[in-house]
Image 1 (cartoon, rainbow, N blue to C red):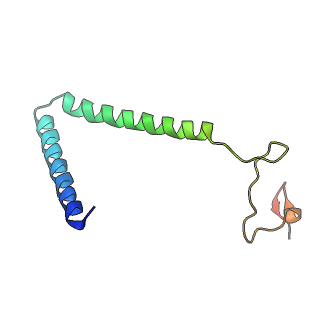
Image 2: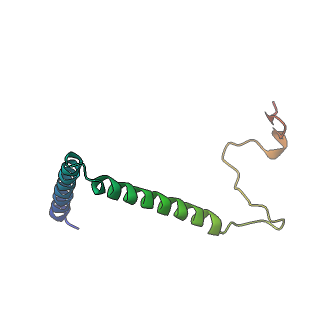
Image 3: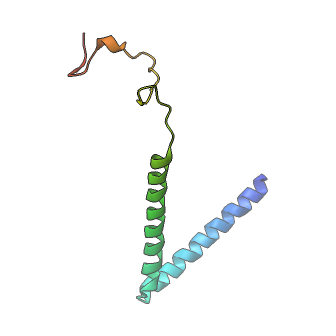
Length: 93
């Protein structure tokens, strides 16, 4: 995509956004039920779709496990060795 094409697309998006805002405000002035119901329905659908996608991703992600079925996490750089970690409190001095 060229710079000119990108700028044209940006102007088009701005124009559509301005027109949609004008239609929305005109609908509010006319006290139209649909002018509020349609955006709320779109927002609710987008939220439901997003949360479904997050759940699906979490449910179907394959993890690399060791022989005991536990997930292996690589050691973080600068982390103390496991023998210095007290599971009941945290780090031992």
